[in-house]
Length: 267
Ligand SMILES: [Mg+2]
Image 1 (cartoon, helix red, strand yellow):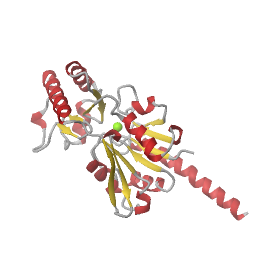
Image 2 (image 1 turned 180 degrees about the vertical axis):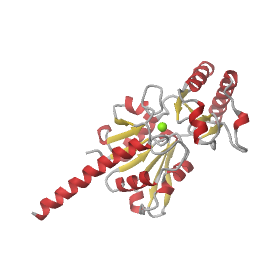
Image 3 (image 1 turned 120 degrees about the vertical axis):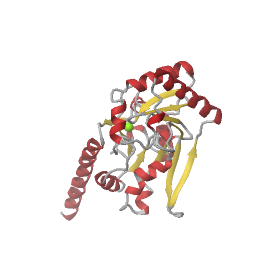
């Protein structure tokens, strides 16, 4: 049986950039009784708290010790410390200031050249380019834009593909991945979900075969593809609804198993 369920976040556990719904929160809480649960995503730590942890209202501190947060594609790892009753950072591999500057300039130049620099559409105080420590993220309409607006911006990924193509010409020393609905994540080579997943295997002392991964961008070029390429069993979902469906199936099988075991015990 699998020991670890690992999840992309945006479009896999939630509607991009929003907190998980009650159903997913309930399913994840139940899964914490059976598996190590490992969300891995390009988001920052505070977004992991807002989108996932804060929504697991019924989870006990003991259950939270089975939740492992692989932040910024797993280049940062946080786990729950029971004694402190708080999250602790286990490791962090940040970009240098020069790398952040070069990537930010490259993306801005590329987006401006192509006419996709939408500064006029930003909410006050919002930013298109965000330093997430281990990666730099371009969000075409900023962090706080409405979901519908974001879905409509680049549904066929063509805008982002052209920005990425230009970035690769200007600064080929970095890798660029399309994620979420309006995002491009720039990283140093190898600092993608494969890096995060390898550290997950090491930190949790498990093997590839012990992990089942859920993601929506599992095709080549997508930010979940490095996990597929590693040979980790993956369920491709279109939305959190598909994930809920799969989790209900998994939990249903486990519940049935438990009942059968109890039945044998009584006999
Ligand atoms: Mg996703």
